[in-house]
Picture 1 (cartoon, rainbow, N blue to C red):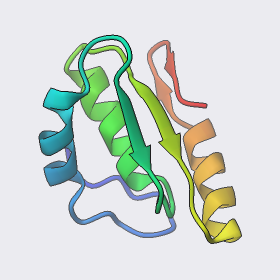
Picture 2 (picture 1 turned 45 degrees about the vertical axis):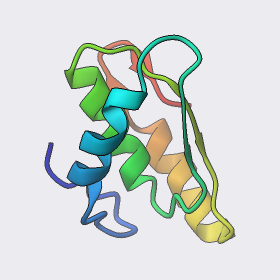
Picture 3 (picture 1 turned 180 degrees about the vertical axis):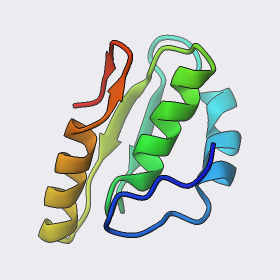
Length: 88
């Protein structure tokens, strides 16, 4: 998968997070929650990982206590294109 550099920071454990969470995020009703989303690197990496596997994206909730980080994450997520699958 490789690291997803969002300009905010490089999530060094993105591959491990994707590998650990992907099996649990199958089927309708699955949800991933990142409450320290920072620059959205893990959220974007997970979405790209699942998309590459041909899986539908689960509901993904991202938040952060830092308003600057949250604003950056929203912008980074809005810029992601996954061949018809959108992150919002």
